Image 1 (cartoon, rainbow, N blue to C red):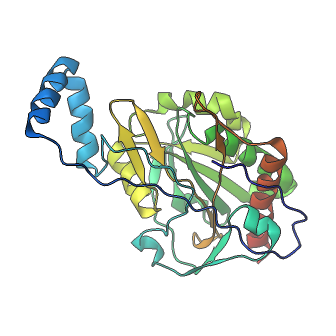
Image 2 (image 1 turned 45 degrees about the vertical axis):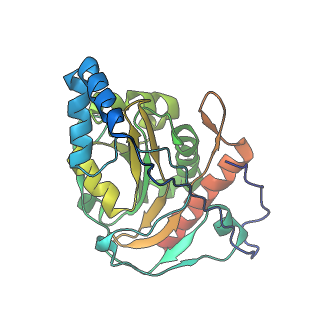
Length: 281
C-alpha cells in the first residue's frame, strides 16, 4: 500500500482522502482433468485439510480464493439499517478516513476474550465502544493497529475508562483462544484493562464478519488470510456513530505491515479525538 502523506493540524478543514482500493479476478475455465489432479492431492494431504475446507465452505468463505487487498470500509449489514454515510470534514478526519453514520443499532454478539471469558457487546452499554478487526496470529495490520489502539488509550487519559476497545479475530484457521497469544505479545495490548481480543467458533465469527461488512478470504494452499480493515465507533447506547479506515504499508517479501511512527501517532489521535467527541454529546 502506498504510504500515506502526513497531514497538518487536526482542526483545519480539507478534502477527504479516498484510499479505497480493491482488486478482483473472475474465475477461469478449468479443464475437467484438472479436478482429478486436485482430488489426488487432497487424498495425499489427508482428511484434516478436507474438513477445514468443508467448514470454510459451510460458513460461506471461499477456501481457495485469490488474495484481495482493500482498505475500503464497506457498509455494515442489515443490523445497521443500511444507513447513509458521509465523510467528516477536517484533515484529521480525512487522514483516518472518518465517516459519520446515521445511528443504527450495532449487531449484538457474544464471543470469548483472550482469557476465555464470554464478552457480550450488550454489556458495554454506557460506554463508547471502538470495534476493530485483525488476525489473532498478528500477521496482518495487527502490529500497526495495535500500536494505534495503545496510543489512543494513552491520549484519552482519564477518559479511557469510559471507552472500551474490542478487537474481533479475522483468522478462520486459528479461532481458539490459545491462538491469540501472538497478537497479545506483539501488540502489548493485554495490559490495557479496557481492551479485549475476541474469538469463537467459526460460525459465530462469520456471523459477526457478515454483520459488520468484513470480507474474509482464506487460501488453504498458502494458509494466508485476506480481509478488509475498518473501525466502528459506537455510542453509549450501542449505536453506530462513526466508521474509519485503518491502513498500513506491507513490506515485501516479508509480508509484515508497518507505518511511520508519526502516522501511527496521528491515527491514534484521531481515534481518541472522535471517541471523546461521542462522550461529549
